[in-house]
Length: 464
Image (cartoon, rainbow, N blue to C red; front, side, top):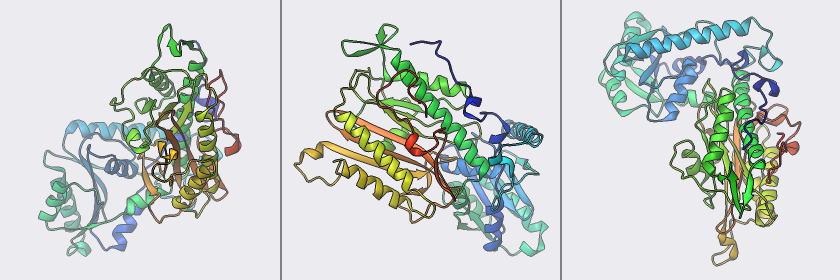
């Protein structure tokens, strides 16, 4: 491996990783609107370490991360954060101080056109009073949240008889019990998850930057593979057998260089078509390291996470010394289906429609998921995943939902075909839906057709 291979800086892509363009401030308007429309006393979101979904909503509402149990409570008096330790309180206060400095720096510059309008039409962001008061004691989070609600009721006569509290469906059971024992009636709301479907300019820019880092990580792998040698069909790194773990380390180094979370990358050689299972195992270390043979497809997945919490997702497939057989046909089919899916993903179109168009394109190339039992085609399988991406790796809209993709929606489109004898080919891009159509996030290509998703690595060939 050539360690002296030049690295393009983040600014080469036209935007900086830690620059003011990635400041994403809290969004609280959806909660305020929901409280008013349901005549409720307030809203409670419990942040836990057990699931990314409440954590993502917590960050959406607060603009900060927390690895500890905490609660976001919003009443007519405004938002309050509940925590159990002084250390957590100080950590949150430090994050708000850092965020305020970023915002101050951002306001002192002339931002790029995409971000310059801090409050575009329909924007739910707030640009003042970023920090939220933090309430801390050692009691359970649910008990603390009830105490904040009690305080709001005693200070507002109009709310004295109100008992309804809005909560997301993911609220932990123990916190729900604490709120009910305090006399509150819980009503589930999807206000925050619905609001998160549409990304504003700052969110789209954050995803674009992290997606660019993911593309650069795969480009780095491709360049380094091209510098390796092959002996008896085995790829060698500095004279030793190269493995998928080595490729993961190359990707992690590139992500770290760009200021992006480096744990979420995986390289696999597999016929397994369960993309969701592999995606959940990204960065978990449960996938074993595999030596790399020439002529065998290597599926490379990178799910980077930026410092502001927003994710990207890229899948590419590389074959060293491909003979142009099954993997070439599969790659052509998957890339054509991906381009078809991207072209279909216009405003007002549902993910289901995009799915069906991609499925039809794969079938046109002979990859038919409906092959009869006993057919040779049963040795092959396909997988298509289309879902939103943002503060969660997977979020609304999903294929099985009735939602349409309106302007501001950001989705990942992942397609793969798999053969029990030859391996698998998988490609994935993230696209942004706008009034003008669809664009591929993170790419400098002028159109989706110009994307380079090269199957066979050659030095500096990956330009997307």
